[in-house]
Length: 305
Image 1 (cartoon, rainbow, N blue to C red):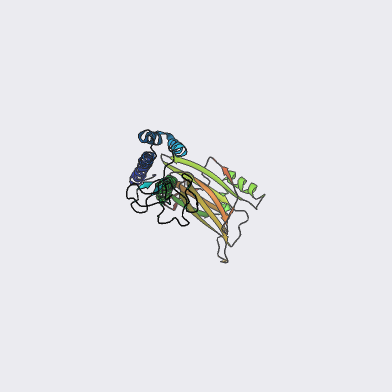
Image 2 (image 1 turned 90 degrees about the vertical axis):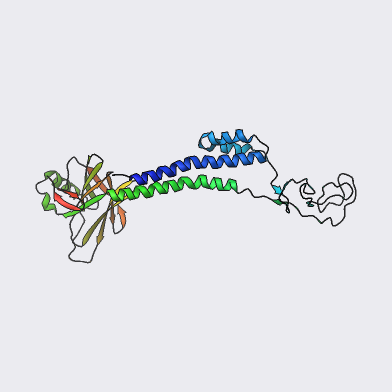
């Protein structure tokens, strides 16, 4: 019962990959970013990796020094706002005063350093381009998406496990079959006082890893054309038996008011009741005996001892 060995291995491998991979990505980013900003790269890398719950990484992003994200349009060398020419290839990056070479804005008329008049059209330069830092966005995306993907993966394996481990048996029974069981006939009589509801008796037992859940469901308002369907739905958060009451025009409908269900899984099964696809309330009473009068094994009903 439970998740298979191969499924567990895959989940464990993914978990370990995430556990190691995300800190490594953060460490590489912090180290390279700190080097560009002239910070203590080794120290901040250790802080970002070792601090729990990404606290070190968050602190680094908040206090890191600013740095120029501009580059030369020709050779891609790093430049700053103050550069008039690229120090690597000599490309003119900004307008300048023809007298003293001080950086000037295109709409200035006088140089602020030497007070010399500036030409009306001070062009002939190519401004630097801004570098895009996409690494941070990618890391944050990984941090957000990876836990979600891990939960989805766990859900898939859990769903497959529950589907393989669960079995269910159902039977339509009549009230007359319980004439020799006064505790159940008394319960049925009490339920008849409010026929607008649906009622159920539940008995749970377990043997090793296998857990059995038995329900006797009573529908006081059921009539001749009422059909009853039941299915077991398993997933990450457990197993539920879904019972659906629906009207049929078939005059040969069962019209039975009692439904007996036994479910076997590695978790106790809950109960959800629907009427024509709409969920309705069901009053469940716990009992210390099996009210179904039968046991179901691999969807076959056999008499109980």
